[in-house]
Each structure stands twice: as structure tokens, then as C-alpha cells.
Length: 240
Length: 289
Ligand SMILES: Nc1ncnc2c1ncn2[C@@H]1O[C@H](COP(=O)(O)OP(=O)(O)OP(=O)(O)O)[C@@H](O)[C@H]1O
Ligand SMILES: [Mg+2]
Picture (cartoon, chains in turn brown, purple):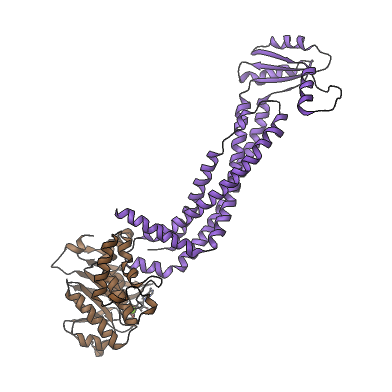
């Protein structure tokens, strides 16, 4: 699993001939994708296009029906069940519904994984503080999630995703529950994080944000990649 | 260091889980305690009987009760001619009667007791052979030997053992269901939390560990309560059994003092095993990571 960190210079994320079926119904059809180290990409497409399915393949919540997914040169479709947590610790995952622990403070939410790994408390404090500083939530560390706005909750989610310094950050509709202004701030935050060397993949159907960012845009429709352009915009026509 | 920190964290999660379970903790513990007490009681009784049986089984002695009007001395001389007989002790009925009167303050009746011979033998194999020969003596009314009593007690013990196994099996199954349900409720109430932890790469053992320890603490708590019961029962029953019951039996009963400690160790082990096993099984079923 160390390989996820060590391999450089080739595509960090590689999907080859990916087919995914649910009960015989295709959700992804022959998907081939390379996403390089430190790259920032949007995954766009209408509802039911297969965005979440593709994301779930990357963090091994699902396995492809056919094809291989490699991250950092490691074929993650071959991981055993006990290796899946190791993979997920190397990925930061951000969710549409934030998925924060309601009975834990902001600090404890971000610290949870580190503590579960037995990191000593001084180190935990240092790393959590620096993650909270990146998302500008240093002064909210003692709050409970329910007392935060949606945008703040998502920033806690992002802090948790980056606290262990993952090379890859996956975000499935991270702005789906946020207003336009907050959405833009969250995506700009993710962009800043990618500029520190993290590979970022964001799924969204938020056209204004995609258009504003001018990043790589991978378009999915009916389970197929129909376009993949650098500095692109949300191609409404093609996707219709 | 790292593993110690993880272990302490798991312990902390366990206490949080126990606190959240509230009153249902006590429900589980009392049911498990009843099951373990019954199990321990059966175990203790069968062990005690086993001890008695083996001590009696090795007593190479036959008691022969003589018909009235036969001379004990003469009969004793005849008996001592038999092979394997090592020693014949005569207990005249007057002696036995006097002893009984002082011991039990029996009213002054006519002496109902027979003359008795205690016949010591060389080896176990000889007991039944000799007993058969003694039965042919016209002077002997009735014989009694520990081996036979031991056989009968052994049957009682076997019955108890089987009954004990069945009862323990049924109670363990019931307990597993209760523990399983409790842990299942905990898992359901923490469903979202478990999903989040799993998605963020927390290892399954860190998630399941507190649940398994929660089950183990139920077993431990119940075993301690059951042990207290068994200890009290033992302290109360033991003198009673010695003074009242065994003094009427014809042979000495040193084997009865089966210690309580082995039973308590078994009860504790079983309690913890059922508790931890039940919740491990439930977590395995309902936490798929
Ligand atoms: N667990 C599942 N079981 C069966 N079918 C599923 C499952 N998950 C997704 N699908 C199907 O796969 C297809 C792709 O779904 P997916 O959730 O990946 O789309 P999406 O692009 O994320 O859509 P949205 O924008 O609405 O989130 C859909 O037809 C969906 O019905
Ligand atoms: Mg989706």
C-alpha cells in the first residue's frame, strides 16, 4: 500500500475498461480515465449518469463488474477486505451530506481517524489545528456540527479529509447542499488544496461553478465518458 | 505505545457504549446471571457427586447384616476363609445401638439393629464376586457395599450432567439471543457513525472492538453476580449436607468437598466467552465493511 505514496510521474488514478452493472443494468460502460498527480478535475453529468458509481469504485465502496482501477499503481480492485481501510486512509473523501459525527465536536470529528490509528495526542493536536487552519475554522474547534452552517460543516468535512495528508481527495457533489456563494468558496478551497500537491476529483452538476473554475472537465452520460477537456466548461448541450 | 493508545481508545469507546445502553445493560446482565447460576449449580453438584462416587468406589468394604440368632464370631470366621478377604471387623448390635442412641437421642426401644460385619477386601475386582458369595450365606440377612451405591449415584450424576448440558445449552442460546439483540440495537443506533468511520478508513476492529468488549463486560458482570450466588449457596448448603444427609449413609464421605473455585473459574470463562462471542457474532453479521 505504500506504493500509493511512492509512485510518481505516471497517472495517479487510472481506470481501464471499467464496466459496472447493477442487476444486469449498466451504470458505467467502458470507462477509461487517467488523472495525474496533483491534477484538479470535475466529473459532470446529469442525474443517473454514473458519477457516484465511479466515485464509489475509487474508494472501494463498490467493485467494477469488469476492468481495473489503479491508484498510485496499486490495483485496488484486488484489495482484500482488510486492506480497504488502508486504501481509505490514503484517500480524503468529502461527501454531499458532510457525514460528520453529531455527538463529537469539530475538533474530535477531525481527530477521530488519527486517534483510531493511535497517533499520540500532541501530534493529533498539531495536525488537527493545521487542517482546521487550512479550512479557516480554527476558532470553531469546540462547536458541535449542528451549530455550524452548511458551508462550515462541509469545511469540517474537508479538514477531516485532509488531516492525514492524503495524495488524493475525492468529493462527490460536495456543494449539493450549499447555496451558490458558499459552493464557490468550497470549490475554491478544494482548488487551493490541490495546489499543495493533492489530486482532487469533484463530481458535480453545478454548471456555474464548473464554468467559473476553467479546469479539466470529464463528462459522463448514461455511464459513458462523452468528453474530457482541459480548461473546459459544463457542456449542457452535449449532456442533454 | 501506539497499540496501547489504540487499546485505551477502544476501552473509552466501550464505556461510552455501555453508558448509552442504559437500563438494557441490567436486563442482559440479570438474564445472563440467572443462566450462569443454574449452570454453576449443576456443575458444582455433579462435581460433588463425582467426588463422592470416586471415594466410595475405592472403599473396598462390604457391610453384612446378620440374621438374629447367628453367632457373629462364627460367621466372621467363615467369611474370613473366603479368598480376597483381608480383615473382618465385628460390630455387635449392642455397640451400634449404644452409639446411635448417644448420637441421635433415640427413645429407649428394643434394639432394632442387627449384628454387623465390616469385611475389608484386597482389590476392587473382588468386591462383587465376594458379595455374590456372601449372599449365599444363610446367616446373612442383607449386604451392602459402596460400589453398588456408587454405581447408582453415578447414574444420578450422568442424568444431572445431561440435564445440565441441555439446560446450559438452552440458556446459552437464549442469552446469545438477548446479547445479540442488545448489540444489534447499539449497532442500529450507531449505524451512521459506523458508516462514517468505515468510509474514513477506521479499521473494522476498532469499530467492532468496543462492541465485543461491551458483550464481554456483560459476561463478566453476570459471572460475578452468579459467583456471589453460588458462593452463598455453597456456604449455606455445605454444613447441611454434611450433618443431615451424609451421616445417615453407611460409608465415610470425604470426597464431597469439591472446591467451589474450579466452578467459579468455569462460570467466569463461560460468561465472558458467551458475552464476547455473542457480540462478535452480531457485529460480524451487521457490520459489513
Ligand atoms: N446501489 C445501486 N443499486 C442499483 N442501481 C444503482 C445503485 N447505485 C446506482 N445505481 C444506478 O446506477 C446509475 C448511476 O447512478 P449514480 O448514482 O452513479 O448516478 P449519479 O451520476 O451519481 O447521479 P446523481 O447526480 O443523481 O447523484 C443509475 O441508473 C442508478 O439508478
Ligand atoms: Mg450521485
